Image (cartoon, rainbow, N blue to C red):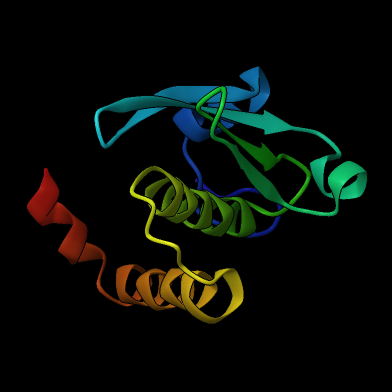
Length: 116
């Protein structure tokens, strides 16, 4: 199915957005909650945020599906950077890693099949 922006979507993804959250992600043995919040970008000037104290990722629900997915990938990398104390520079390392991984997964969707 396609959403109004022409992006592929599923009833499951629409239900996630309607409820405002998705199943927690298990990252490094931690349950990381994921919430979709309206006006996050307007209120905090960001499309996503990882709260290390509450172990929660927030994503702006007003952006396109593709941008939300890219933001989720970025915030997962933020979790890894924070929890593993990697010390990645946000602009020169983390954001570039995000874009590189995004392109790999977009250009090679079959690559994700090895994790099933």
